[in-house]
Amino acid sequence: MREAIKEAEDKMKKALVSLDKEFARLRTGRATTSLLDGVRVDYYGTLTPIDQIASVSTPDSRTITIQPWDRKAFSVVEKAILKSDLGLTPVNDGKIIRIGIPPLTEDRRKDLAKVAKKYTEEAKVAVRNVRRDANEVLKKLKSDKKISEDEQHKGQEEIQKLTDAYVAKTDAALAKKEKEIMEI
Image (cartoon, rainbow, N blue to C red; front, side, top):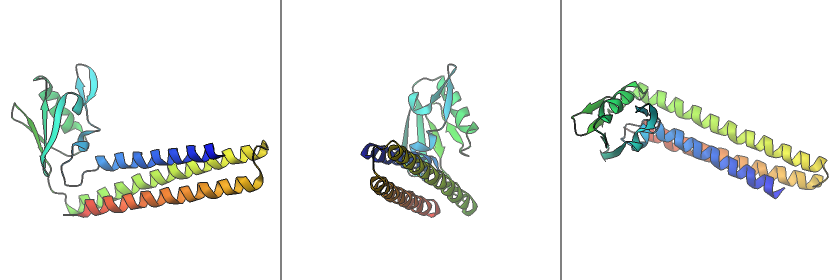
């Protein structure tokens, strides 16, 4: 029973980590290298993350710089960023690629807040699915007579407390992200 509860908690943690990764990719008007995490470059026939073929940095809060290690990679990096759904325009001066992060419009901020809510809801569904699976494990243990009915109920209560805690954490993460998105 302890093992089932521990496994449920690990899976709930993974749902929260996944939510954080999704939030990192959301553009908030501030430059961050994680904006480019989802962008893949066709580098010699292989889709490669930008940070594996170039150094990516943020010299200030409104600029991302990319310095490919291979001269031939400049144009493919530029094309990949233009093709991405980030809405960013890279500027290539032959030595470095600069991406200016424009301030977000009010409508775009509201759209991003909606996307953040969607990601949060997906994380909550994942947490609830973990709860359901863990409760199924407890029911199976009881039907196999490995635990008593009282132990099953105690286990379900613990799993419910975990679920409530992780749902609260996703809500807190959403509130923080919304504040960041709406900040001008």
